[in-house]
Amino acid sequence: MPRSVGQSAEIRAFWTAAAAQDSDADGLRPTARDPYLQDAVEYAIERRLRPGDHVLDIGCGDGASTVRFAKFVACILGVDYIDAFACKAATRAREAGADNAAFEPANVLDLAGVRARHGLFDAAITIRCLINLASAAEQTAAIAEIAACIAPGGLYLTSEGWAEGMEGLNLLRRRAGLPEIAVVKYNRLLRRADFEREASRYFDIEDYVGLGFFLMLSRVVQPLLVAPDPPSHIHKLNQIAARLEQQCLFGKEFQSCDYAGVYVLRRKA
Image (cartoon, rainbow, N blue to C red; front, side):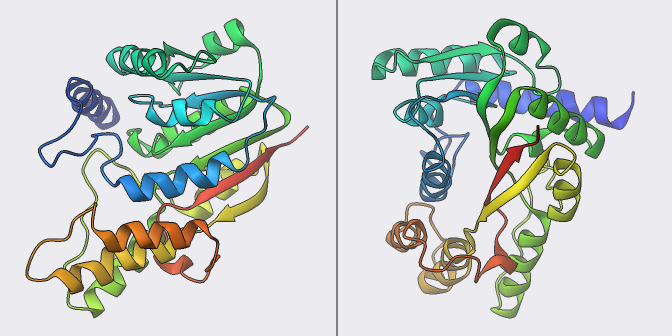
């Protein structure tokens, strides 16, 4: 069996199990274990959405982000390749009264059915979706599929996992006497240079919203502050760091340790 096929099955099994629970052993959502990082990412994305937009949220997971984005757009469709997540997201939207949010199963590697049923979208969103694909070839194919869903002039808003930022962050941690952060086995980080090269086939790169300040404080300063106790994703320092990051006080000054920043890409005609 090809390695990527085996990896794909393992990744699907992981997320199928995750969809069966609302929180993990630490009381955190499996799809967004760092709530303040997630908030900063979603804030950067929602600022780019417009009231009349028809939006596609790919890899929507439990739908929490989709329901948040629904407040800023005309309508939004969340898709996930785990059927249980699509069902869970639909329940969340119904309970939240988000009548303009709909959900259905779909795979980022084959969105032809989504296009046939819904047409082109004004914007598409992925948050840690491409990193859950098994190979670079699949990531490349996914970018093409996403581009095919967006109308000319529309936006692709994405926060994935950027390899250069993780390497830079781990360099800081080593210098501070901290162990490196190990990337979980079901994640395949993307190199920003590779992502930009492939994305540039379909998109103009309009902006990059950096989150390096938050990551430096939460992944370097907080562990040093609380040692010997373990760091926590819900520590007050993380909350403050996310709030300051959202106020755009630091821009791209901490880009070397930024593995989660948001790309703003404009679909070419």
